[in-house]
Image 1 (cartoon, rainbow, N blue to C red):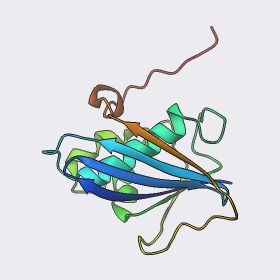
Image 2 (image 1 turned 45 degrees about the vertical axis):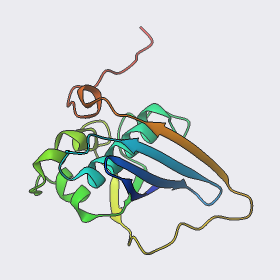
Image 3 (image 1 turned 30 degrees about the vertical axis):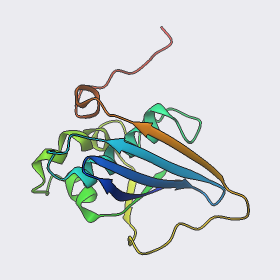
Length: 148
């Protein structure tokens, strides 16, 4: 099973650091810039960082075709509710669409925000910044690269 853990932190209005780890030796932080007026922005920042790490950065060195074999450890149960379509956070639904399509079948665990991210000696920490395009990150239609 491949584990991705994310933990968002508000920096300023519209800017969030989403700390992440895959295993105990590799992790980092993705700074996500969103519109300051966006409702449920911290939740959306975590979803955008997850999508970026899994589908664009490919932190597991593969492009997932399904969620089988993945465990997403997230900071809030709202993400699980979005996947189950039982959430009232309508602004976040489009940003969670990739969890119901491309990552369908991934196990979603909620980890307490107070539980620290632990690393072994000398972890590899990566710092990145993204400004997610809503036309891409909030779209249910995803472009998939194919060899043909």
